[in-house]
Length: 321
Image 1 (cartoon, one colour):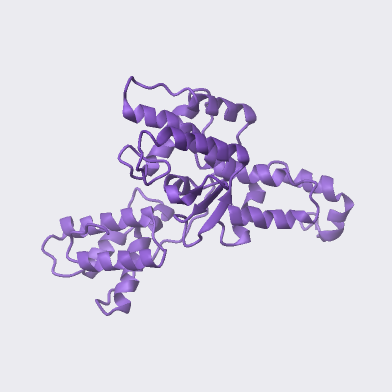
Image 2 (cartoon, rainbow, N blue to C red; image 1 turned 180 degrees about the vertical axis):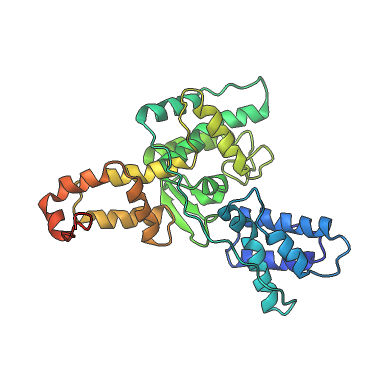
């Protein structure tokens, strides 16, 4: 439960409990609601109730924000206002959420050499003598990033894995902490299952009663920054192109799609399996990776030859007309 401190603390905590019970809660929601609670407490210390001024002040787009950042920050507050209105606590006007702006960022397309160099850097992390954090990091980081690479997990899904979520005997991961309510399971490659088993045997003596599979030193979930900070530091040991840890998920999807070039009618079935494994609620989310798959048009032409032209209509050339 969140430790809220504003005039609406009790209401916020009820809302949090409700959303968690509905499996509709996330770290992003928690962080932004905590900031809203602090804003109400510090900017309006004498307020007796939540007012329109307080809501409008928080939801107003800031000069330093883009539309998507503002949406991410205020979504949880809008959800809380709807929840409160339905219970008759107050009747405030819901702020207008800025229109979503399509992202133009294209994830980095890893080369085999880049990945080899990155994992080499992961395997050669230096540690200070008898320094517990360094020891834990040296054991955890190489396995954590190999899991992202080999399974397509979201970074937050891997961070929040608990011991009970990982079945090392059968090589199955149960993803409970994910985007929205979309619990799913991921089957590990045998080599990844063996590697995670070695990791578990190595880290268990250091933290024998740990709750999380990849624990921080205090057995809490690593913060989001831990992932990117470690990725950036190790990536730059040998590589210079811009890349993020999340691009490993994109690489997993495009690598799979490219490997199906001779599957024929099984292509759609494999795409469905990939979609479910990656935790997509609709197939359209997985189809997005078509646009990220290198040389996909050439692959399709190679496989279909003239039949592709028979399927696609011969549209008139409006520019010539």
